[in-house]
Image: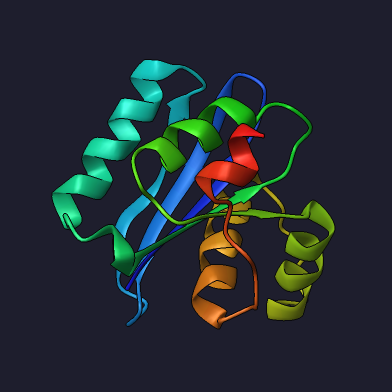
Length: 130
């Protein structure tokens, strides 16, 4: 299974990609919040697998800034989960006593949440487009 954590912001998104064994497949990287950035992310994912049933993408909910990326990922057939930032914060704090918080750390934390088996429901085409 491949796990992707994305920390969403207005102009850019920080991403982290790992697998079930905890192997880092792509160290934290940043994409712009535009079509070019979305395609760059999709190329990285596609270079790892063509079977998207083995992929889980987690996005932190940040107002409306995640909508374009969410729609893109869903349209590409990637199982995508939108996570409450409070849950991300609490999960990150449970992993370490350090108060380190950066966008790249949050992307890694979101990927770890996906890996942990937290019971989340992915967005479907119908729930996104309604």
